[in-house]
Length: 126
View 1: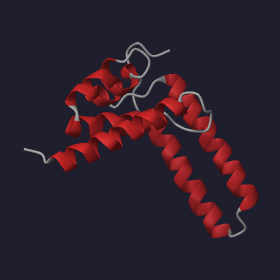
View 2: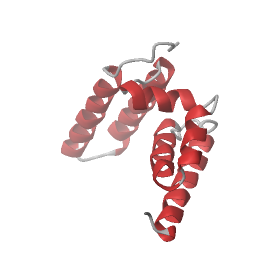
View 3: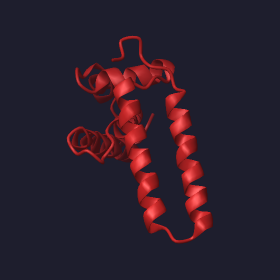
């Protein structure tokens, strides 16, 4: 049995993450799916009903369910992630003066991009 304090902490994390995910759906540089994944994970520990609601939500649910079922990332999310990673590389190349830090961060971001591109797409992806 989970304590009331722990359950409330999980619910707070779930609702905060969900709110950030909703904001991210409208603010270009703020991601949404990663916050929604954290929200459903935390909700499953503190409020299974809220977790079910997120999974069944018409706008946010399909991406969460696709990730949970097969680690799939929709094509439009891949393109957005690649665009943001590319922008990040350009900004760090312009602003970071230490060559070894520039190189390390660029290699890391390229690795993340490769990982994203190699994830499967959901069956009904656009």
